[in-house]
Image (cartoon, rainbow, N blue to C red; front, side):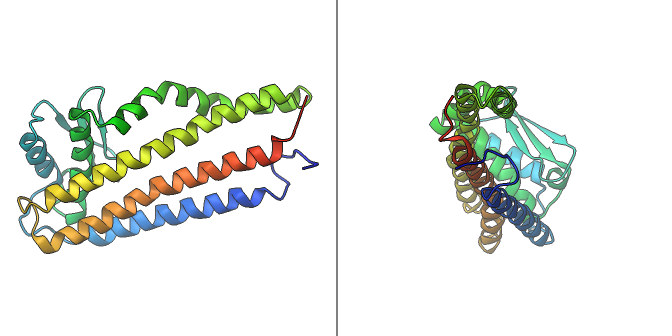
Length: 232
C-alpha cells in the first residue's frame, strides 16, 4: 500500500461497514426490548424480585441488588458483588425486563462457579484498559516520528488487546443468556410460552457484543492493511 492516510484511503470502507453493523445491532436490541417490554408477565413479578429469587435459589444471598439510572445499563459487578438493574428493568414486570434481570443473574452464577472465560476476561482488563487508552496515541506518535514501524506496531498490538477482550466476552455473554433461559424455563417465574420471548430479547442483546467484536476486528484489519508493510 503506497499511502498511510488514516481517513482518505480505500480501507475506510471497513469503518463504514463496522459502523453499519453497530447501528443495526443497537437498533435491533432496542427494538426487541421495546417489543417484549409491552408484554407483562402473567405472574406480575418485577425484574428486581425475579433477580432476588434467582440469586437466593443459587445460594447468592450475599449479592445485593441495586437500581441504577438509564435503560439497558444493567450489569453485574464481581468486584463488590452487586447486581445493578436499570430503571427499565428494576421495577418492570415485563417479560423483557425479567429476561434481562435473569441474564445478569447468570453472570453472578458464573462468578460463583469460577466460569473460566469470565476469569480470563477479568484478568486481562488492566491490559485492555492500557490498550484502549494508548493504542491510537502510540500509532499517531509513530506517524509523527517519521513512520516509526516499532511505535506503530506497538500501537496495533495494544489495539489487538481490545479485540481480544471483546472476543473473550462473547462466550461470557452467551453463557449468561443460556443460564438465564434455563432458569426461566423451569417455570418458577414465567409461563412456558413466555420463555421464547426472553430468548428473542437475549439473542438481540448478544448480537450487540458480536457487532462490537466485528467492528473492532475490522478496525484492527484496517490498521494492519495501512501500516503492516511499513518499515523504519
